[in-house]
Amino acid sequence: MGRAVSRAGILAGGTLAIAMAAGAEAGAPEKSADIGVDRGAWAACDRLDVEHGFPAAGGLWFETGLRSWEALPEAVEARLGAGIEPRRGAGVRAVWSTLTIGEGETLRDAEIGGVLRVGGGRVEVDLADTRFAGRSLRRARARALVVLDRHWIAGATVDVIPEATNWAPEVVPEVRGRGGPWLLAATIHEHLELAVGLEPRPGFTALVRYQGGAPTAGVVLCLGALQFQAEASDHPYLGRTAKVRLRWGGAR
Amino acid sequence: MRARCAGMLAFIVLSWTGEVLGAPVVNEFVGRPAAGEGEWIEIANAGSAPLSLAGWSIRDATGRGHRLPPGTGVEPGGFLVLAARPESLRVRYHLPDSIAVVSPEGWPVLNDHDAGPGLPADVIVLADLAGATRDSVAYFETWLSPSPGRSLERVDPGAPGDRPASWGWSLDPSGATPGRGNSLSGGGTAGDLVWMGPAEVSPRRDSGVFHYQLPGPGLLGIRLLDANGREVAVLQEPEESPARGRWVWGPGLAGPSRPGLYLLCLRWEGREGRVRRCRPVWVEP
Image (cartoon, rainbow over all chains, first blue to last red; front, top):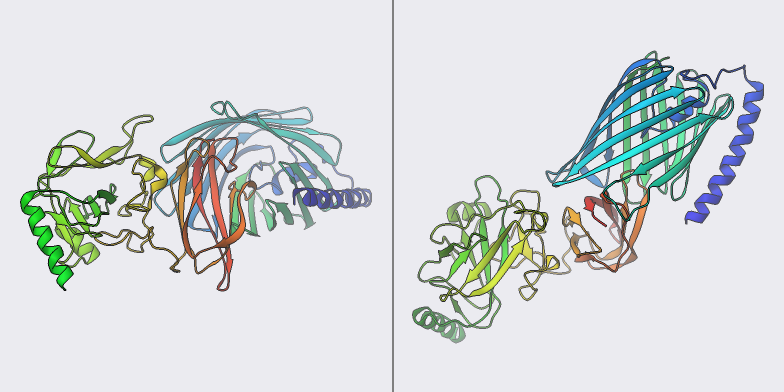
């Protein structure tokens, strides 16, 4: 199953890369590699990643989000975040999320971190604490992204759990790009995960993603400093899932 | 009729003599009661003879015994309910007078939080006239349902009481079955979708027991996922399963290598259609 997914993903990725190159040739000149500009490949880092997306650099931002699963009928995950992310230099971020489960249990997750935008890259380091049913778990996450050229950004995320002595840190490489109206994101967890976006007009992006054995469809709407993102999927085990995120701030 | 009279006679004689036959077990209890319900403990007579429990006692981890009143007894295959608040229990579960509900002298307040790392939340001990332990269960916080009022049932009166695999949350729609057979003991009855079990599992160290109730017999597959739907482990390939049963996640099965919260999900397909249900589980590898 995983091998079949990977082959399909590689084929789709190759086809899209050619399409992106063609689109970029025909399109207007872009400053996609500019730090802090929410166009170019940086847009693919955010709009195709509702889980760990980040705003265009440029100042203060706030965000909130909700997620639900059909197979967890009374569970809702709520997320609240805020931060400052300058165009160059250091910033801070904090995210608080809760997963309320119908039987009275609640998962609480607090995450604080720092961001550094320098040269052609962005580095983010987060420390988090998760609590559920009397248990707690601390973890650290580092994500580094480097601009390769005007179309492509590559990087990796490393997760570390200090208390998990028998578990090796997990490294998830990623590559994201943009050509014309097309956005692409590929991450390699255990299997290849692909996301493709199309921005036919400024401020509106439609996306599809293949993650966790299920296709996901979504849209991203940008209205000035306000960004609305919604995704939905039909997972073989989780059933219909929905995720929405509302963010204000950052540069537009 | 004659057999019933003989049984009653034996019960009266045994009550008078204080002699004990049969095997009493702690069969069900609520350590986290609903508002106004009060804690209760069900004793089952798994033996073949009537049983007098007059003068027996129930005690908790403090070791202080609470004596059962005179005349207390239970017939073979029958149940006795010990309750902190008998009347509220009768009202909540519509218990007829034929079901014995008694209140001991005082009540051993059952704790629902572990006494410390690796220590059980509390112990329920059923002691005979001489003070000897006849049955006991030391339970941990994670054994209890987070839903107040949902009882912890013994899957079978013969199951060893000290094993987590012997206990599970009641599948009954009312949340418990005081005075009657446990919902986990019955098999093959279809009904509302239920997927229950402990909130925390350490599959490499101990077994976690999960109970399901499906719309009917069919193919049942079980997966462990992260919150984003990524597959972490295939715990059971789709296989024919009855409408109601239990599934044990133990050392022989796969699990994640990192601790954390996961979604334990079942997918069932049968003549009645398809259902999917998940429950969050904290996994300690």
